[in-house]
Amino acid sequence: MIHHRFYRFIKDMNPGELPGQPAQMRMSPAPLDPDFVLPRDPSDTAHPSSVLIPVYPDSNQKLHVVLTLRSNNIRHAGQISFPGGRQENSETLEETALRELYEEVGIPGSIVKTAGPITPLYLHRTDNQITPFVGFMDEKPKLVPSPVEVSEIVTAELDLLLSDKNRKREQWDLPQTSFDVPFWDIHDVPLWGATAMIMSEFLAIYEKFIESDPVTASKTALKK
Picture 1 (cartoon, rainbow, N blue to C red):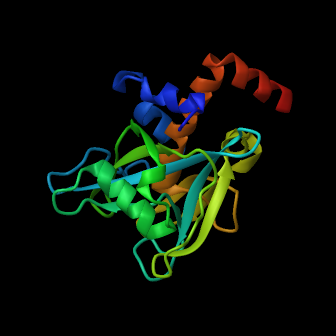
Picture 2 (cartoon, rainbow, N blue to C red):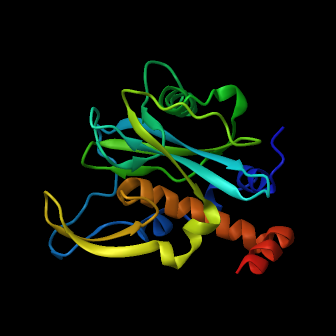
């Protein structure tokens, strides 16, 4: 039984209450060339895709998120990502996210309760329209990385991701042009790009929850 109050907070949110693209853009790489524009709206050929944001509480009810370091055998090799992929056959986007969760990190959908989707994100480089789903578990699950797709499973506490000390910016020369890149410094590999943009909105929702929940807010204040 999922009992963490954050689950119900997301479940009860209306789509219009989501922080949306402005929250995503806080962690978006920004081209240094003002004439270089990244497409934000999905193309007519965009592939429907989804990811699962897997969340679980520790023994102190602090929430953690599960991420993967993608292996060198697949697209976006060597990057930190949420479990996910392209929609197949007649499955729903939620079913896609849960299938990929099991295939990549061994978490069965039967122990996950989804709180619903948050704002989709268009990734123009691969022409994917990504819908993120937030999934809650009662405790830390057994994690089994796919030997083909995942080189490492990474977990991070949400409160640590909120801390400014874990956010950095650097100028990177990427294939298209040079960018000012915001990222989370929580691993040898930076957490950046589409995953960071999705995470940015998710954390904005978490911040709204903290502000609205007296018990969680007091615990967070004590921690600071």
